[in-house]
Image 1 (cartoon, rainbow, N blue to C red):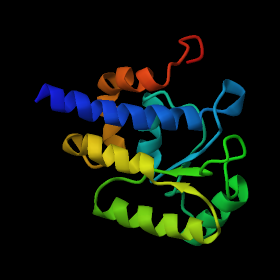
Image 2: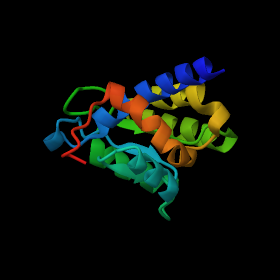
Image 3: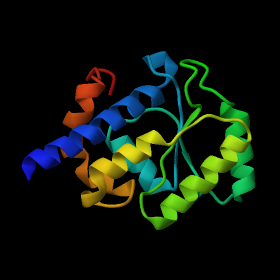
Length: 159
């Protein structure tokens, strides 16, 4: 059982490590790629895992059309640093989160934006037994950080 957990956490650690690198501000060697989450607790969970870049919250009192337009105007079609997806879309992996992921992703892609959905899919595969929300990552931060740090070595001076 622990081997299975280790393999799942390695999968999640790789996805989170790669996302953390892309999310890191360019002045700190990252790509400045924002992560879009549902709300404040999701943002706090990512920060507990060492994310230091932009984290945009869907739930901010705006309608979805205004939010989509804001994201498109602020971040554009491609990431300017690595020419990869301009945003990482990370909704919960429950039914509501799945619908939101699909709907927001489709609307952003309708503007021609490249969207990273793969990070979420890796977390679904790796962490479903631990919970179905981004927020749950916070309670597993201490366990997950070493797995993430294998893929994204962070200078302790930086944090």
